[in-house]
Length: 207
Image (cartoon, rainbow, N blue to C red):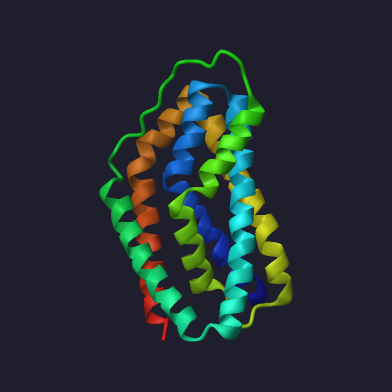
């Protein structure tokens, strides 16, 4: 069971990062509300593919750094920890900010375009770059099991796609949307607290 703890820890940390609204979250919400549920789900798929790409890059890059990086790897952990603390502060301070979306319908559904824009939004999101690097640096063991390298990217794809699909389905219906918006303050603050603790741990364990 201990072999699976790093897997669960990394996936849980990444899920909290996704739950806290950022550019990717807002894009899926706006697509689902202003265009259609189908396009919202297509955008969710694009988010999953983008997250899988970053997951694969994080695994490959950190594996190399852990083997050859030395001080560079230590510097990455300190920088990642500081960024996570900054991100936690930003999320906490903006937890009460409302999410606003346009509700005008789209003339014609275009899932392919929604997928492409979702993928580009995810790949260009500075939040996910920093979070992925910091989370992997903090929670990936020094000598991970070989299967972990292969399991993480597809599992990240499934998790991110499912989460953003839930977002698309929820925000394309009025009652689930109202429930989430009502709980947004506490969801954001819980995510900020967890990310802040992770940042502190990353800095402490860097040397």
